[in-house]
Image (cartoon, rainbow, N blue to C red; front, side, top):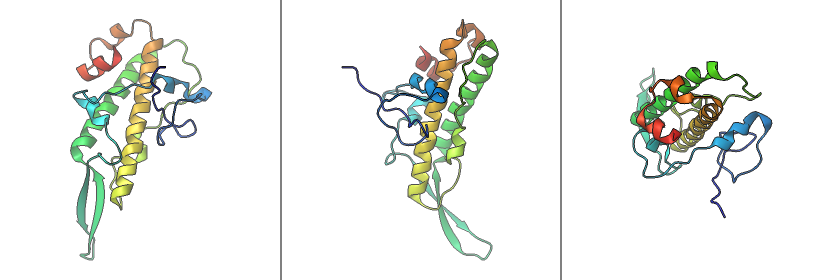
Length: 172
C-alpha cells in the first residue's frame, strides 16, 4: 500500500496537517503537495521542521516607561530563508500565469506572512504555532506552483533557466 502523506485541512489549508482526504473545488491543487526529505539541502531543508524543532528566539524590549518585556519570533536566518522560498514561488507563479490558457476556478493560497512568521509574539508557544502555520502555508504555495507547472505547456522554456537548484530538484 502506498505511503499516505498528511495534507493540509480542507477548510483551513494552513492548519495542522490531516490524513489525505477529498479536496474542495477551490483547493484541488493541494493534491500537488510536495514531499520533503530530511536529506534535502539548501532552502527547502528549512521547511523540514516541527513545532518542537523550529528555531524561536527571545527578544527583549523596553517600552516608553522603561519597563522591559519579552517577545518571541522565528530566527532571522529562518525568516530570510522562508522569504526566499516565498519570493521564488511568487516569481514562478508570475512567469507561468500568462502562459496558462485555462486556469480552473480556484482560490490562490494566502500569503504565508498572513500566519505570522514575520511577527513577534507574546509567548514562545504562539511564535511556534505561527511558524508551523506559516510553514504549512509555504507548502501550500509550492503546491499551487507545482500545479501551474503541470498545466503549463513547455514550462521549462517559460522559466528561461531562472530556477535555483533547490527548486529545480523539487520540480523534477
